[in-house]
Image (cartoon, rainbow, N blue to C red; front, side, top):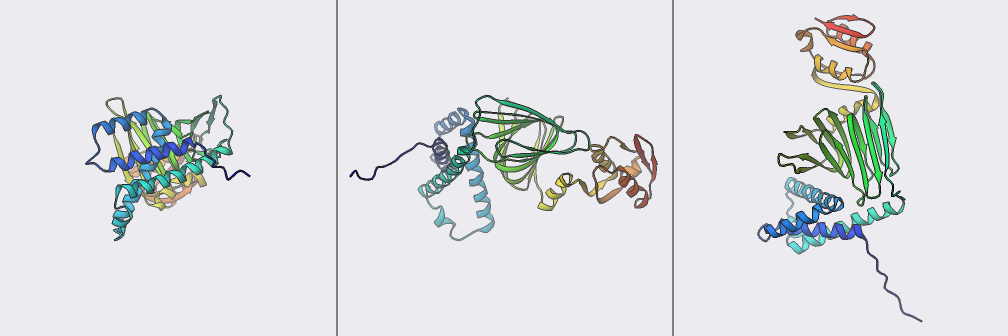
Length: 329
């Protein structure tokens, strides 16, 4: 009887994650990291989007671990990551785990080699949930246009205008990339909110991590990894990142429940937001009325409720017509 046979197989996702982990661990040792090593990493990253996504994903885990260590100041930290070989072992194990999950996901999905292109749109005051073939979901807010392009090795979406909540099922072999207002957001296993107004982009990270890439003056793409609670506001020339509390992010997602929540907002800003959801527009007739500060949660498509609040609680004058509501002191 023949003895037990040794079975072997090649897992491309695992190979890529292992290479990414090795690059990341070696780069942390700045004393031995040379320009030649950096050139090698740059060439490896530029050769494949899958390489970039694997590296960014592991880098985000590394950064998150360092953040937690800085907060906790655990005495055993030095024992946990005391040597480069120990760090390499930890991250190669992490890479293997990520690749195994990706492989299971890939086994249950058959990808057509022909790209599938679709366009989705919502009218003013409407929202829609899109269920994608890969198990991901996208919730479109009012007056939003989104295009998707799925094919072998790619999952791309373009937020043409408006706002959308992305709940992405991670796939290491097919990164989900969203382009909006001249920027790109690459899913690293995450839940995020994007709002695009012309050249102005806002990205709020709710779960997981994502990489935001912005065009630089040299024409290259500069990127930063966002963590839960990060909110990035980007234009063609600027990028700012701030921290938001869970309650603040939940308030921003009120539209998904049919309400708008305002905290210390001017009436002028509230009216502008309301006008995104309603064809019957709110007009603030003077600066004094527009400067009034309010805290309120109101139905997003009920302009009558807005008018009633302005009249009864703020003591303002309200004049209603078929197409608009004019508010003044």
